[in-house]
Image (cartoon, rainbow, N blue to C red; front, side):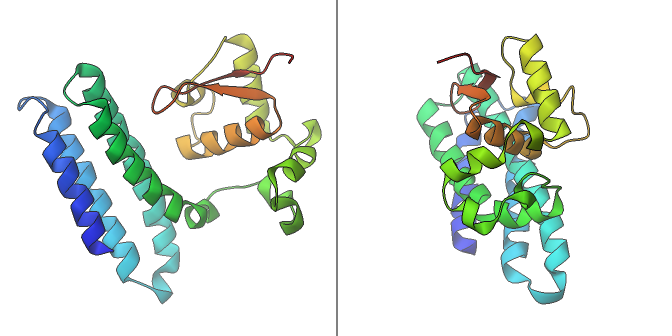
Length: 200
């Protein structure tokens, strides 16, 4: 496992060679890639008594991955990186995020998900009735209000109305709203926008 993280970090470093030498993003991206690798190794090596510490580290890793992918997206938009290189690295980090995300979510409030029974979790269709208007959280209501006032929004736009909420939690709220057909998602990679779903 450690070897996989090392290879991915080496791939990031090779890609960073295309950044201009004087650009501060180059060193920031290097620092993030190293921090992610170190923390992933730490998560995989320790066990037992350190489990709560693991969850805190996992949250940091997920936030660092978001930040690193943001740096790479900026580099792609500047023409320093090809879309293919950016996408390959992003896909690898997304796989890592998905593999550690379920445990990391234990450290955050999950008011809607906690109400869903294991039987209801078996299919997305069965989740839809559970997430009715009555079960929408206050955060999700704020998201809907923001989207009703604005044509569309990205996660970072929604952080303005939810300043103490992580991007990951906002994304989870948006995913739940997608399941209820209240919002729709447009775009891909780091150019994803959300808007209120109109009548079919």
